[in-house]
Structures are given as structure tokens and as C-alpha cells.
Amino acid sequence: MLIQVDNLAKVYKGGRGLSQTGFSVDKGEFIAIVGHNGAGKSTLLKMLAGWIIPDSGEVFVDGLHLKNRLALVRKIGFVPESPNLFDFFSVQANLKLFARLFKLPLSRIEEILEEFDLLAYRHSKIQDLSKGLKQRVSIGRSLLADPPVLLFDEPSSGLDFEMTKEIYRLLRSSHAAGKTILFTSHRPEEIKSLATRILLLHQGEIIFDGPPKEYFLTKIHESLYA
Amino acid sequence: MIQNILILTLNDLAIALKNKTIYLILFIPFFVFLSLQLIDQESAGLQQVKIGLVKDQAYPTMIIEKIQASDKLFSILWLNDQAEGKKRLKEKKLDGILLATAEAAPGLKLIVLKKTSHATIATVESLSALQTAVEGKSKNWIADIQSLQDSGVQRQTLPTWILMLVLLVGFIIIPAQVAEEKEKKLLLGLLQTPINEFEWLLAKLLLGMILIHLAVIFLHLLGGFEVTNVLSYWAFISAGSFCFSSFGISLGFLCRNQASARSLGVFFYLPLLLPSALSDFSEKLTNFAPLLPSYQFYQPIKAILLEGSAISDFPLDLLYLIFVGVLTSLLSYQLIKKRWLM
Image (cartoon, rainbow over all chains, first blue to last red):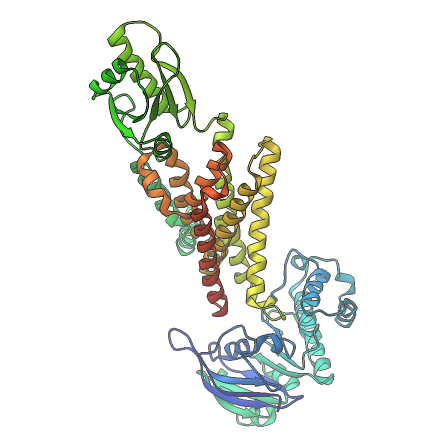
């Protein structure tokens, strides 16, 4: 088992958030976390990424506790819904900063630029790029240290059809390369075409955990989004 | 069209209210009013001149008797020695100290804080008026005037500009930058790398200190201002830049976005700048300003630049600045650990 989550909770003012959630993830799984806005999907991913400090609960990733952040950053790559890149710097400068902090050889930047088809944009400033390109840079940055687990918060949010296809291709190739992926989504076609397992969150609790086939057979998705 | 303009204006006002900008409109006039209340209000013409006389001085008897008799013009304070007098001059508790001259003709030497000040003019005018009333026109009682801060007007304003620069970086630039990193989730992105929160904090502190040092060096190069006690001067610039950069970082952490950080920065900038800078003009402010860390920075810088003082004259001020810096750094560290408003 790669990820173990026990009684993880984070409650915001007004009662929303995530309450006492537990599940485990095996290596190589491709998990869609589904639910209404405010169901706790992003909160769950952000807690796994260390962006939000949980109120309670335990998380272990590859045997490392969530509190061991400095070691965990090499195990988890997180791609937020809005790319958090340094706008005034170029694509290459953004990747270089993170490569330096991870103490990676600069050749790794070339690999990422090539893999994500960003060579033509290496000197472009982030602020001049489209959202799709920014998302590609953001994914590339999260893969710099080659972490075994990738977390994507609404990976295709705000992207056009072509860019969405491109992001799906990148996600699939990362999964094929052996990465374990968790992503949040509202889109049934995205869930169907990518996920091998679905976690449905409702009002901060997991109410479904199973394969996509079973999920769509139960009509739970239609009733939830009706 | 008018309706649209009104809707947009109301929306802008709501944004200004939300990011606290509008509070500045209330705060700035209120603060200026409060500062004006703290500046001594008596008219210079009616104010008694506060004169210090040193006990062991052989003053011309007639002159001292006349000064003591003119209790509407002068209030006299007897001092144990000159050092006590100089201390009280700096605290604005005296307008001048009179010393006996060694010359054959009876006369006095006047020691003031600055030659070009209202207090000095009032002192000389009052003594001159008294002499005219007693003797008519004859040789001046005041044979010599000596000031503690013997430098040009440009140089005398230098400590105020230095204070302004340091506070500008600490309370306007740094909080906005920290809040921007929070607002755009850049800090959270950096914390997904193997850097720890302490390293990030130190880097931000260094940024503030470098910016302040560069600004001060640039000002000195442009103005051609020389410093005699270089080590003491840079020790205080370093301690001040550490203190106010750290303060600014913690303010940035208390805000969700850049606009709030700028507003909060101004809330701290003015109350730290004005009482210290205006303390030269007021005994009331001189009593109140030492509570502020900006005064613990301003006074030593002023004394080093204008009076040739050294770091050994202000050890507590230096420790106070470092203490405030460490305290606010600890606050920032706790806030970053809790991912406060991120």
C-alpha cells in the first residue's frame, strides 16, 4: 500500500470541509475524487500535499508520515487548479528554481521541456502563456523530482477541448510510467476515461469507493448532479 | 450610463472597504491630528525659555541675578555638571545651557542642541531683550554659541530620511511581497520543495536587509554624506533593517492579499515614522516616542551621524531592535507553520 489515510479531518468555519476520512491507495492506482463543490475534494488533496494542516488524523505515504514534509515533497507532486508559477519569470527560470531547490541536475529541465513539448516556450514569460500551457508547465514542474504520487486538482478546469485532450494524454502517460495519480473532477467523461477507481465525497464523507463501472451503474452520479 | 458609473463606483468602494484601503482615509487624518496634539502647542513668543545653569560655574553675578529675576522669561534649572545638561538638552527638557566664559569681560557661552532651531532663537532673543532692558546697548552677554549637533541642515535631516527609507521597505514593500506570495500560492509552491519554513523566512529577512542597505548606501553616495563611526552606523542600520524587515514579514502574514498588506503597512508606517521624526520638535513626543522601536533606531542613528556617538552609547537600543526582530520572526514562523490565511 502506497498511501494510508486514517481519520483525516479538517473542518472550516461554517462546518464545511472533511470529516474523519479514511482510505488506502495502492501503487499504480488512478483515482478520481468526485463530489459537489464544497464536498471536501480539494481540501483532501491539499492536506495530502501539505497545503492545509489537518485538524486530526494520520497520513502515511510510502511509510512517511505527513508531518515529515521535507522527505514527503519527493514522494508527492501536486498540481493545483490554478497554476502557481512565478509570472514574471520564463518557463525555464521557473523550472530552474525548483530544480535547484530539489538539487536536481539542470539536464532534468531539458527532459521536462522536451517531454511536455515546451522547448519552444522555454524563454516565454509565464504571464504570456495560455492557461493550457501554464498547466503543462505546472505539471512538468511537479514531475521534476520524479515523485511516485501525483495529485491533480481539477486538471482540465478552464481548458478548451484540445488542451483538455493534451492534459489527458499527459496524465495517461504519467500513469503508464508507473505513477499513482489522484485527481478531483466533476466531468463524467473525464472520470470514465481516466480513473480506475472513484472516491465520492459528499458533505465531507466518502459515500462511494469503487471502480467507475460500478459507480455509473448505481446512477449515483446522475442523482448527485441532477 | 450614469447608473453604470454609480454601480462601478459603489463596487470600487466595496472593494476598498473589503481590502481595508478605505480605513486609511479615516486613519491618516486622525493620526495626523493626534500627532499635532502631541507637538508642543505654546506659541514660541510666550513660552518660557528653559535655561540650565551648572553649579560649579563662576557666572557673572549681575547677569545671573537678572536672569533669575526675570521668571516670566526664563525658568532656571541648576545642573550638577555639563553632562547632565547635555542629556536634558537632548531630551528637550532644556532649551540651552549657560556656561561662564574665561574672557576678562563678563559674558556667557550658550550651548544649544541646534543653532538653527526655534528654541535657540527664542533663547537668544529673550536674553537679548533682558540685556537691553537692563543695560541698554552694550557688549552682548552671549559671547559664544555652541551646538551639540554641529552640522549643515541637509545632514541634520539625514536621520529622518534614513528612518523613512527603512520603514518604507519594512512596512510597505516587504508586507506586500509576502502577501503576494501567499495570494498567488507561490509560497505553498515553494514549500513543496525540500526547503523548510525557517529557510524561507531567513531569505525574506535577507531580502529586506539587502534592500535597506542598498537604499542607504545609494543615499549616502548621492548626497556625499560621510560617516565617522562607520561600524556603529552599520551595526544600527543592520539591526534596524533586521527589526523592521521581520516586522514587515509578520504583517504580510497577517493579510490575505496585497491590498490588505499595503493598508496594514501604512497603519504601522505612519505611527512609527511621525512620532520619532517629529520628536525633535516636541518634549511631549520625546516622552512618548521611546516606546516605539523606530525611535530606538532613529535616536542612535541621529546621534552617530550628528554628534559622533558610538554603538557603546546605545547598547539597550540595539538589543531592543534585535529583540523586536526576533519576536516578530517567531510570530511569522508560527504563522507559516500553521499555513495562516494561505
